[in-house]
Image (cartoon, rainbow, N blue to C red):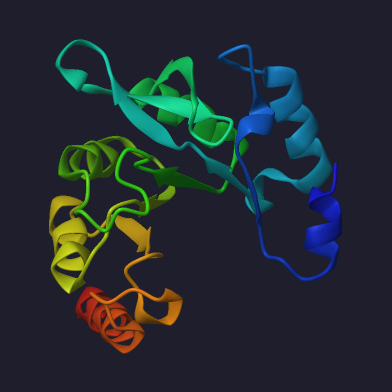
Length: 176
């Protein structure tokens, strides 16, 4: 309802999460309405997920502050299908989000293999070693976002300057 307003005020994209789900399923009518309103190229889908299933091997999309599991598991097919509607994915590993306890390496590896569009990983990042691990396990295909660990947000394990330097060096390596 207010996505267009944010774009009009200068945002490059809007991030949408629970709105595109209803009763644990993807609501294609809402998805199409959103794409029509803001355009696919200005939409980021937040597919926050948590482990579930036998041996917790699958990551299911969660909504409503990460409390409600949908019936949709992150998979190559789901990512390919949803990529038709957006410019980028933001995928929070909700089980480790905000804990600064390390990343979900298995999820990072799966995303690197499966995602057909730009994807940003979030969750559990504690230090520059985790940034390197995301780059390695993600085969350089994923971006990441850091929150609680950053010193500018009160964290003690990752200086903002170190994160910026890491990103700069990584970009320089990609250009070589």
